[in-house]
Amino acid sequence: MFAAEVEPAIGLGRRRSARKPVSLDAKLGRGGLERALCRVVDLSRHGARLQTYSSLRPSTTVWLTLPLIGHFGAKVVWADDFEAGLEFLNPLSDDQFESIVPD
Image (tube, rainbow, N blue to C red):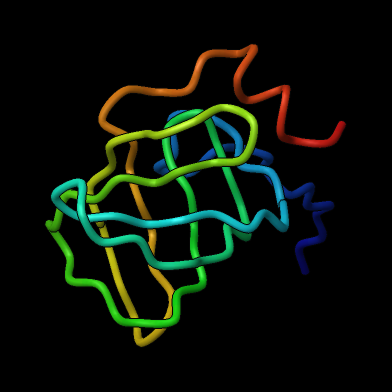
């Protein structure tokens, strides 16, 4: 008989930076014209997970307007009904990230 203690590994998985749960009202735009409301439910320096009111298509480039810090270009990495994952074209700075994510 074998016995072992197991400790879960804490890591980022495929992510480049840790994500934090948030609840932020934001806006989505495509081509600089269309603005749709969405909710950011988690955020990292490199991307975000959104709840949307309309479906998005993977590989689409969008503009996400975040409160307090402005507009960010992003690529839709995955989308499922009214939820989507974005990867920012340029990561948020530490100051930008810390200004909208609670400790």
